[in-house]
Length: 302
Image 1 (tube, rainbow, N blue to C red):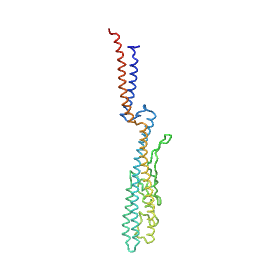
Image 2: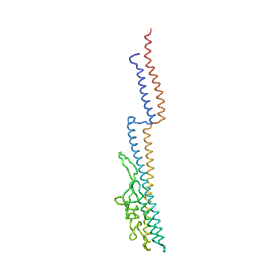
Image 3: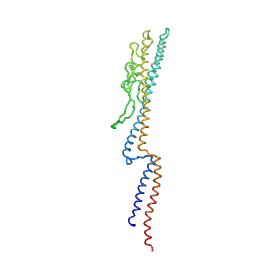
Image 4: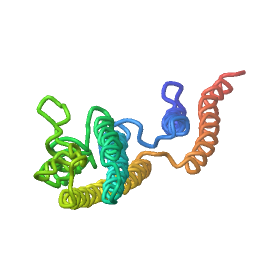
């Protein structure tokens, strides 16, 4: 039966065309945006996971910046400690020279005095971003990573380095509560009895016994500074390794998120071509269905 009120063929063709147009619109959006899952409506589970991981990746980016800042602090401290070792070695050489008979210890002491002043200059200058790792008595921390556990709890982990200004600690000088250099503590500031500290010793009136004691104190100081420099070097190496790991982890997260939400452009290109062809055929089919009603007019022509 043919009806001019209800065109079943046209309705079927129109429904097919609507479905094709919807699919074509989705495919075009994927091609233009590059995303398979761009919003929660596309796939709520994947969108939620991707959004959370992107947020974590931003936190990891901040961790990478913090690691760079921490590395700069450690490198500054290491450079200061290394320079101080060189200065102490010079003082040691001057004291050894003073053991020779006939040497004017007053002149030698004048040279030592300048080297002692240089040690103070090194300690004062070894500050980065307001922190001094070669003077003080506290715990310094460097951000190492951002962690999300299995329960969804997040935390920031740090790498700690304890500054000790006690006898033969790992800092050149101590520090007062107001942030000033304390010259009576630390490797250089701690007194070694009657000869004083490395920073204050005056060999002008030293006899052979005091000279020997001074050399012993200098050697102990060098050993402590070498150990401190080694510790700083170890922390620097660990920070470098952590920086590489964070960068690798960030890349892995980006890759994982991409697998969830990125569109497969080869597949979408094939779909787009197929849907465009289907659209043209559906339009042609709808045109044929609509024209069938016109054929009824031929029944009423004389």
